[in-house]
Amino acid sequence: MHHWSKKNLLIESEEYGTLLYVGLSNSFFRLSPDAKRQTEAFISSGIMMNGDLEKIYRKTGALSEYSSEEMESLFKLKIAKREVGNTTMALTIAPTLDCNFRCAYCYEKDNAKLGFMTNDVMEALFSFIEQRKKSSLYLTWYGGEPLLALEVIKRFNEQAHNKGINLFQTIITNGYLLNFDVIQYFHSISLSGMQITLDGTAGTHNKRRPHMSNTDSYETILNNLDVLYHFCIEHQWRPQVSIRVNIDKENKEEYVELKSLLINKYNDFFHIYFGIVTNFNSCLDQPSCAMNNKEHIDFIRILDQQYGITENNYFPNTLGTNYCAAQTVGSFVFDAEGYMYKCFSDVGIYKKAVGHLIDKKISNIKLETEYVIDSLAINQKGCKECVLLYTCQGGCPNKRMSDKTDMTKLHECHILKNNIEEFLVRHYELSQVKEVVL
Amino acid sequence: MKSSEMVEVVSENNLYARFGITDCLSEDELMDVIGGDCTGQVCFCTPIFGCSPICNCVFNMSSGCGS
Image (cartoon, rainbow over all chains, first blue to last red; front, side):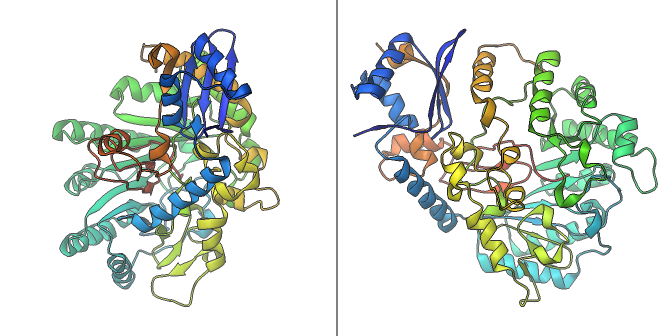
């Protein structure tokens, strides 16, 4: 007996007819009138449909031999299997929490600390890595500003090389110190990705992300991006370089200007995207500047309607079993002192550390369990009923855990949730457009 | 009528791969599911690449973490 999945969504569009979104596998179809008729007959009376149609429905989970409850169990089993069978480890290291910028919205600003990772802490970190006997290590360098501690990164790489550890590395940096020598070094260690933040054009960026002494950090970063681009072209090296633009009500208009500027100069070399500024750790001096879901959606519509920028905003991402690394057993963020955290946003807040590389007395089993088990969307009553459960994965666990009175509060839900029909129709419409849009 | 005439596929993902129900699939189906370049299911998350849903050759670009 096959079930019509509760995670299916049939949409009637005046322009495009019947669309079917299959939430179990994040699949999407447009049905012919005949397919629509057969589908409706099955739903209402259980009349079996054309074999080919049934086959595609079964493959994608629109029709499933498992009930909703069994799918939830299968999903939980998959999480367990992932943890048991995973041969990789994903760690984040903040070699320093010091920073050369003083961003107004920084969620670490109250927890910034001087000093770099010592040899003792690094030695303990290698013991931690080697004890787990994984075949590959995915490492993200983070901070503070990690390039202030370049010597630590070099020391780590040298030791990892000597120990035969297979490393895949990325870095999140403000880009100010990303000069030719650093780029050359990153090339030598085959760095696979970088994320650099710019908050608009010169005036806005320098105001929102001021360097501690240079009043025009924008110019320096742009020069560094230029050097990076030409180095990569010359050496046929293609790391994934993301430019993140943190936006709120104050600077959202500049996103398009900055994006156009970079695309005109470098085509698609940089992956440019916007991040919505949130009031993490009550970090904002002006919380009223932060955009809520409605303002976020309005911004997406403006980008689309006025500038033709769509950026895959209309279709859910195919996430795995979880929203982020904080929800996996083996992922940790380490600070320079050896404290271990589950989430980036907790770095430097000692009471949110779940362990310490050297001081084994430090632990926070309750918080670690909240991240790894309690925060999973599959364990949230509100999420379980949602058609987006298996794609949204509940969103940022840190944000939801900060408001335990209502884990599925509207403003924490994915922006697609309350606009899903409109957004999916637009996604279908865009899939018919063959021209490349900005 | 063929399936291609019944439905227009905009996005198609395999339920069995997504839920790790691979025991019942033939070798050909498994390769169809996980992709020819992948040697098996590996899941990892990084802030820049996001969480890889199926295997390590499928990088799912996400709006990453961090500021």
